Length: 526
Ligand code: PLP
Image: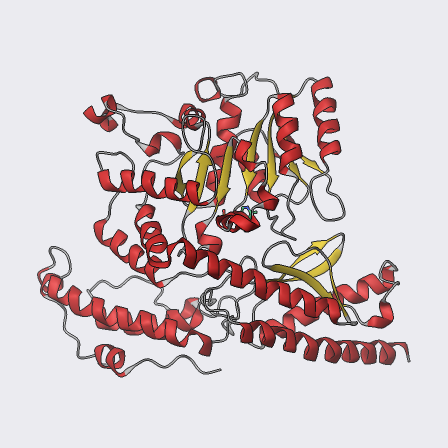
C-alpha cells in the first residue's frame, strides 16, 4: 500500500525545508511565532490535513511497524537551536502521519470505531487558538454557557427529561472520568461526607456492575478507595445482560454481611458484545434499595438520538447519572465525554473546593464553575466543537449517519448468519457484530475442548491475517470462553463497499487458514 500522496500546494509549502528561514520571533529569541509565518504555516497545515483525509484510505489501517522501530527515527536529545516550521511539518508528514494507526480509515472496525469529522476538527483548531480554560465562568464565560446550551441540546435530543428533577451536565475528557464522577457522587450520597472525612473507619461500600461492564468502572472503584473488592460483578444471561435476580441476591447478601451497597452501574452497550442491561428492572431495584444508578452508555447512548430506536434505553431517564461519549460514535475528535445527571449537587459535594485564588465575585451569582464538579481544575472548551458538529450535521444528519452504520452492521450480521462456516456469537443490537469463523464440520461439537481450542487458534490467526493485510482492522473479545472477532461500524468514511470487502476477506482467509492449519495438524500427526 502506498502512502497517501500530497497535493502540489502542500508539496510546495513543505518541500524545501533546508532553505526555509527562521521567522523573526525565532531569530529574536523572544515572543510567539511571527503571525504572518503562522498564517502561512497554518495554510500549509490545512493542506496536509485535507490531503490526509482525502487519502487516508491509501494507508494500511495499521502501520506495518514493530515496537521500538520508531523511536530511533527521532533525535534522542532536544534541539538547542530553533528549527523552521517547514522542517517540522515536513517531518510530521514523513515520520508521524504514516506511522499512526489510522482511526480515520474507513476500514477501521476495531474496538469502537470512531472518527473525527471536519466540523469537529475545525472546532478543535479554534479551541486551541483561544486557549480557553473553562474551569470558572469568569475564565471563559462563553465556554461555560455554550457548554450549558449544547449539553441541554443533547439532553433534549436524547429524549431525557429537563426541568427541576431533570438532567443537566457537562463534558469531561473520557467515559472513564465521567464514570469516576458518577461513582464519586454516589459515594458522597451514601450517608457519609467522604469528601471531608475520607474513608477511614467507614463501612465498606459496594458497587454492582455486570460481569461485562467496562474496566473503567473497576478503575473508578480503585481510584475512589473502594478497591477492586468494592466492585461486585453480577453474572450475565446468555445474551450478556445483567441478571437482575442475581443483583438482588448480591445486595441482600452484602447487607447481611454488614457491607453498604452504594451504586449500581447498568451498561447500555457493553464493550465486548454491546449487550444492553435491563435498565428498567435495575431502576426498580435501585429505587427499592435506595441506590445510585449510573448508566454507562459510552458507546451506544447516541442511538437514543433516533426516537424509533429508544427501546433498549427505556428506564434510563430514572438514572442518577449517565455517560455518553461523543468521541466514540458522534464524529467528535478525541476527547469528549458527556456526563448527564439528575443530581448535580452530589458531584459538586464530592469535588467542590474553592481556595481563595479561585474565588470570583461571580460566585454570588447563579453561574456554573464546572471545575467544582470534577476532579481536575483546568477544562477544555469542548462545547465549541460540539456546537460545530451539531450545527453542521443537524440532528437529522447525525441520525442518518448512525442509522446507516447500524444498517451496515445488520447486513454483515446477516451474511454471517447465512454462512454455514461462520457463526454469530452475540445479538447485534447496534453497529457491532460479534462472530467467528466456524467450519460447518464443527457444528454441534464446539463445546469439545479440542474443537474449542482449534477454533480459538483459527480465529486468532484469522484476525492477525486480516489486520496484516492493511485494508481492515478488527479487534477481538472473549465471550463465554470463545475468542470472538468484533466488527464495529462507526466511522464516518465507512461505506457499504468497505463492509463488503471485510466480509469478502473473512470468507477468503477463513477457509484458507482452516486448510493450512488442518494440513499442519495432519503433518504433525503423521
Ligand atoms: N464504557 C464503555 C462501555 C466503553 O466501551 C468504553 C471504551 O470503549 C469506556 C467506558 C471507556 O471510554 P473512555 O476511553 O472514554 O474512557
